[in-house]
Amino acid sequence: MTSKNRRITRRNALKSSIGMAAASFCPGTVSRALGFESANERPRLGVIGCGVRWDKRVFVEDGRYGVGKEFPKFGDVVSVCDVDANRLDRAKGIVKGWLGKDPKTAGDYRRIIDDPNIDVVHISTPDHWHAKIAIEAMLAGKDVYCEKPMTLTIEEGRLICDVVKKTGAVFQVGTQQRSSRQFIKAIAMIRDGRLGKLHRVQCGIGGAPASPELPAAQPPKHLDWNRWLGPLHRARHGSIYACSAA
Image 1 (cartoon, rainbow, N blue to C red):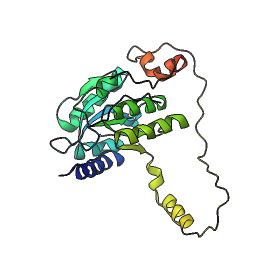
Image 2: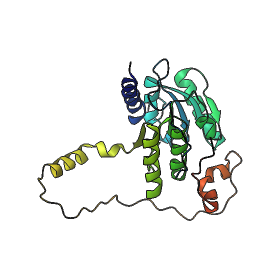
Image 3: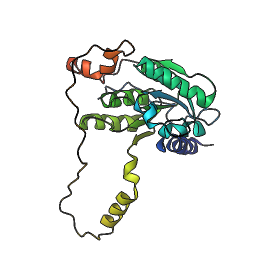
Image 4: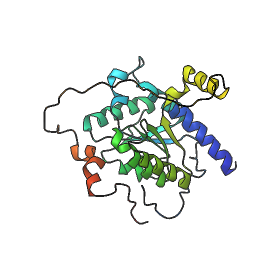
């Protein structure tokens, strides 16, 4: 099988298994992302962030959460990571129920980034972690599926695009709504010229729920609060995207 064919196979596998459901660049190219395929053609997944996607409130009737029930059909979840020990333990139990064995566990996402046996990283962290983890994962030779929003700033989006081009990694974002029938129909009507010449486009995403006033509180013992803050805590001290020397 040619490298090109392997690439198509992995892209389809990633889309099926997960889609259904800046950087000072280090020198060199990322070889594993350019046509790599695990020996058994089942991508090995590392999950970073085991919060709401693993919560009982979004469980389906068979006891497995949302899109996650698709994972075992196409790949193996070999490692889970979360800064909340309770959520980490819950995710570990869910994966064991799927695959019959415990996944590796970590409180630090870098354990997954550094694991050469992981092919695909699923990022389901709070929004402020998305860009940093995605960039580091792709530079480490992994493909990425990231929950929305992809970034918090235009700059971060440009950095991710640059890293995708540099590494050749597959990068997919969980914006499935754009595939809904009404959006596809609207796009087709516009491209067919049925709305005439457009001079202005205005987008509306509706309102968002407002948070009540939250009292100050000490972080619970099972939560690594400083690691949860991550880039929010360090951003004032310089770029969070600097890549250490190879």
